[in-house]
Image 1 (cartoon, rainbow, N blue to C red):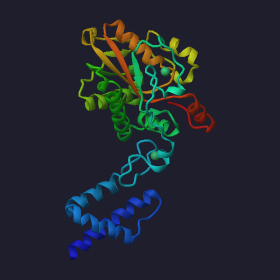
Image 2 (cartoon, rainbow, N blue to C red):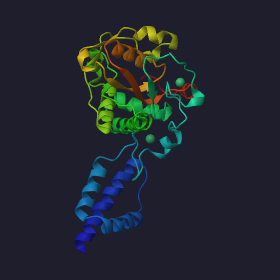
Image 3 (cartoon, protein in one colour):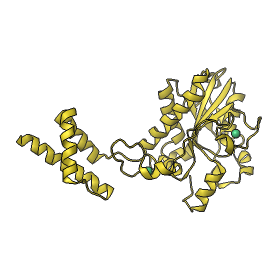
Image 4 (cartoon, protein in one colour):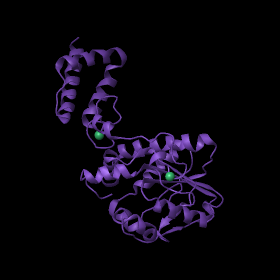
Length: 292
Ligand SMILES: [Zn+2]
Ligand SMILES: [Zn+2]
């Protein structure tokens, strides 16, 4: 009984420590009730380990980084803003059908799919993944992307031979330390059980960040800046191209064009998020920080 009490005290102390991060405090009564339930379903040692892990490495919201409550995948604030894309979707760009203005022949790739609209909270998550090396964010987005690929491509009989991430120029990778599109591509490849081809598609020229340019200049900015280092690796293959955000589609289009010119049979795309006009206006109107 004494040992049991000390475990409870340790649990309580650790739970309280976690709540300081929240800004609130779990009451002693609630802590005791939760603790009592845990004794029934799980070994004490495992429970202690879990509490210590949660206290030292609290689970974070993959979008905004705040501490999560148990069983939450994203925090309550982000869940009010996040917009999952459900059917019907445009079978070309992947936007919800009523928000799409693309036309057949606009793109070299066959289709794009995205699980999320690029809202304020999605933008925060992309920003965290790009600039804070957040593994939570990467796995969260990557798994959602893999689900979209299964639903829209694999279940319809599309056979993907390899996965490729949209490359960054080597100087840009040096500065950031990693390429988030490759991290996403790796998660997607693992999830759907298809090989990731790294360093096959390369970016040979540094460019202005696409988001700093009007749509009309984006195709020109990105034109001719990609190359395929080993065409034999993709010849005759159906490629799944991964990126974090689709806006004008110019980058995906140029990558697809380069892959097809090098002998790929077809290119399908998946991005973690996709912009729609109304949300972009909301982001702008809110004065939300720019710079991805
Ligand atoms: Zn959040
Ligand atoms: Zn469309």
